[in-house]
Amino acid sequence: MREAKLEPVVISYSAGISACEMGEQVQRALALLSEMRAAKLEPDVISYSAGISACEKGEHWQRAVALLGKMRDAKLEPNVIFSYNAAISACQNGKQWQRALSLLRDIRQMNLYPDLFAYGIVASMCEHGGQKKLVQSLTREMCGLIAAE
Image 1: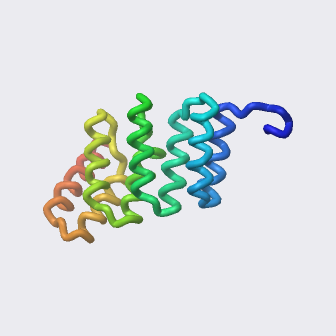
Image 2 (image 1 turned 60 degrees about the vertical axis):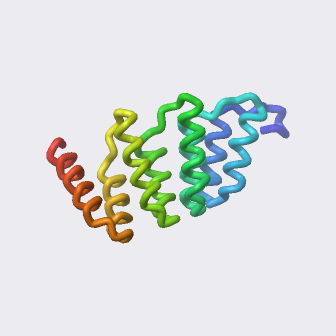
């Protein structure tokens, strides 16, 4: 784009970040997010979510969670499926059940509705962490979610 003397816009950067995510190029995805800000462009939900997903695929749970925080700091509403679930999956890769549980609680505090994927991952992580009571509680919540559908 630059060779053609075209200035990238948010959607251009988001597409690049998403391509980096698919190619498991975490550092390049994060660099594109930084370039956006340097170009005075504000990343949107799609940009951040693609970055979070890239971090998840690259097994960088701390960066995924940090991007989710930056997204909220920017007053953007994270998407349950593309933002939170990717961050929760990143925590799973890093074996961080407490952080994943915290993210699940964040979803509910934002008046969003966790899906079965999020509950399933967190319950599985809690089980591997020896947290039987938490697994039972999460299972009851999942059953309530299924019954509501």
